[in-house]
Length: 174
Length: 104
Image 1 (tube, chains in turn blue, red):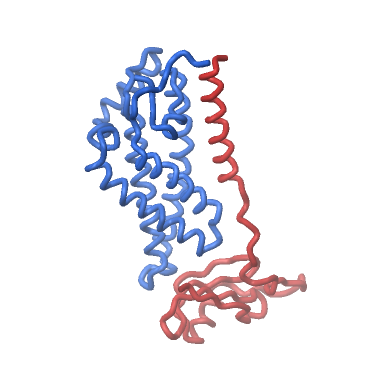
Image 2: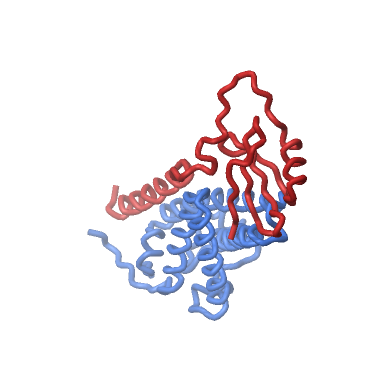
């Protein structure tokens, strides 16, 4: 039995739904790479989700807002350094490194989805540079996701909390 | 190991497994674009180049934007003479069009 309780609500239902639906959409897009109907649908879903997140990051509840977790590069460096001291500063919302990861992922998915949508227009059909940017962005997102999961695990261990479960239940300890 | 750590590691393992499957999974078996029609059995056959096929398709009225290979066929991505987006699959030896896919 755990001795502490997760009693602070941090992630609202919409931000959590957004997160896991995006995971599903991106996984589908990768796995169904050669099945165009599924792949394209997944891509449009991902783009729609990003659209929602950009709005929610401005008008949503406190920890969903970009102002809560998008910080200067120096703050990110300081946070990462603090992880090595064994006493990292704890953030109830996204920590600075997490905030940077979110920004990079949002951009990556936007570029991948956006170029994907362009690829099926008459103007850009068969145009090599668009296809290469699309593939590059998709691979970058995959790489970022791997780093993201690793970062979540490291932060969780160092802060003594389960950040993955927190993104499911929405709750963390105070 | 505390219960908390076990829960965390289980969650991470689950996610990692999902990611690994995503990255390593081969494309689901779908009907290939050529249905094996681009198979070449004669070892002495002369293969057409992408440029040669592109030129032939241009002569037929296609707007050739990109040449590739797929499933043993030469694949052209471009527009047909009606201005519609197509993928044209050509046999690499005979030069015959084996399939045309419309993208819409």
